[in-house]
Length: 373
Image (cartoon, rainbow, N blue to C red; front, side, top):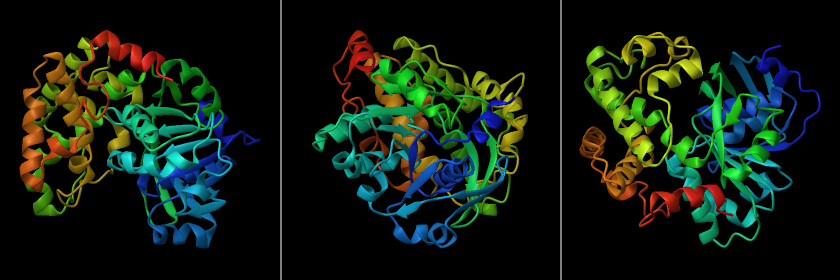
């Protein structure tokens, strides 16, 4: 039996879940959990975005998962959302992580698990630093996924479509020795999650950093001319565009190696996640069936820039600078994004300072992620 079928056949719910965020990803995850029979709460800071879920009592989902997922509580109160919850799945743009950490800190309790889906680059480190700064009294376990489990879209305020569930998504806890416990508790609902080593591994295998900002910026003219009327991956990737993505990937892998992390290349990641083959990155992306039908952004004011540049590329650049590893292509994309949006993404983004890594040696950084309690 396929692991997906095992999860769907899970008759007895083993944990109460809260999904934090009612966007494309949060709607899909909450619906899937409900279809599998788990008790689900859904939190969103904008209360009116929850009205459809409240009215219908849950979320209709189609695609790889079909059915109706009941949601027992849809609320804009974090205290209500987390009361009695075993696992909180944060499914928001990573730009929201710091603010959500502040909202969640007073309500988190011992052994409650918080998983960032995904953490992007440095998410768990930033989240843990923020909840401690805000006077956390309990001892929750903070973890992050390397990427988001689903390729999905919200179709309405109470409907979602899951195009594809990835074959495998690594998850790591902070500290790393808690990872086995996190996976054990997640497994009844999410058997696709696998051991991610530590949060350096999950952060540095952030493939969104490679695929999203440069692909969006290099297709900027087409996006603005057509309002995104083309398939983002299948049509947007060309051999020339892929060359830039490959250079960004090489710089990411260099930073990872200096930190002692063996990270998959983007081509390896596509094969592991989607069984995608190709002689080069362009061909592998075009051969990824799960990407077919995913449309381009309607304009350049999109999270592929305003999230992935400050939360993915800026910390990679900052780590590279601290380690003596030049990142010229990454730096170029950061500069172009800042020009396009009229913002200083270097000032807004995650850095070694904001992640609590400034001045640390590689040995000290690795000890921090392995042993920090």
